[in-house]
Amino acid sequence: MAHAPQIKIPATYMRGGTSKGVFFSLKDLPEAAQIPGPARDALLLRVIGSPDPYDKQIDGMGGATSSTSKTVILSKSIKADHDVDYLFGQVSIDKPFVDWSGNCGNLTAAVGSFAISNGLVDASRIPHNGVAVVRVWQANIGKTIIAHVPITNGEVQETGDFELDGVTFPAAEVQVEFLDPAAEEEGGGGSMFPTGNLIDDLEVPGVGTFKATMINAGIPTIFVNAEDIGYKGTELQGAINGDPKALLMFETIRVYGALRMGLISNVDEAAKRQHTPKVAFVAKPADYVSSSGKAVAAADVDLLVRALSMGKLHHAMMGTAAVAIGTAAAISGTLVNLAAGGVERNAVRFGHPSGTLRVGAQASLVNGEWTVNKAIMSRSARVLMEGYVRVPGDSF
Image: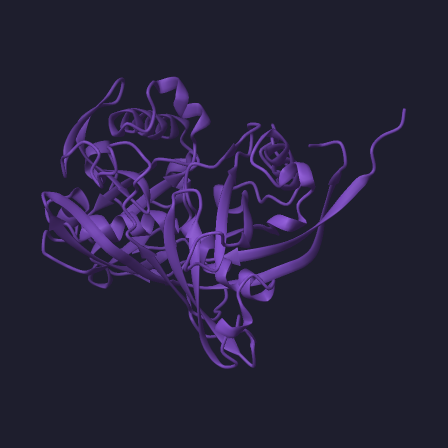
């Protein structure tokens, strides 16, 4: 019996922030995958190595975690005053679907670098030495992101001394600005707080009723107090990811929070929407030892945050969730703001499992609605490998 040979597709494997994924130029994809639909999803699943009942993604480029099961498709922007269109696909590890419902803030740090290196940014906008300002249209959520990419001798500068907790080696700093990060296309009619409240009593069958801040900023996120669900906020991955009961509890919170936020119309829809919303728990500052063995002192942070992504506790912090944290911290009366001391602020440093992260955001109340002009954070990015990925020709 004859089998279809493998085909090869130009691709770049990149780290962005504390994530990594396979990047494609739209024009390099096979014709059937250049448009959204089953062929594109099937191709990306095969590239990453999903669905994998062994949860290892051995037969693909994925790394068997939510942070490493990611794909990006880039093209010259069709939007005025933008350089590149950025589409992010979160690939499920054990199920046959790609979630297109949100952005990846970490990989955003690599988008500008890829776009410059692959000719997607007009050469006149790239200095010989300095910083290139790349205007990115985030197609999943319909938002503008600005990446400040360092340039040396006309090429992207990837090496440097900027250190990011959750990433082993230093690299060049890439500042990323998320403009008007409150979601417009999610539930709540475009409201940053889809329930209309800064804090709600969230009833979760089989779990209980507790205070929650549900916000659409960066990515839809449900914040709860650590102590209300039996945690301290100092936990590392092993304390939760090895506990099936805990994971079930967090997934149940996610499902009923999504329902309350209007992101789904019934609980069954949550199974096809794993990437959003996120669930995070917050606590006041406390001493702890990070996953790398680095001591984090209570005095070093404004609050503690732990967040789950694709059903598991994240090893650091998702970039989009960091936007949600910074935004909620800037708004007096949210659970995030209260954990950070309940004072007005335009930046916050929080502790996560791998260390600390600072994010800035300025919020204002306009006509009874909260708004944030932008959120800012620094990440880093670099190319890990470039060339071609190969997949069986009949796999999509």
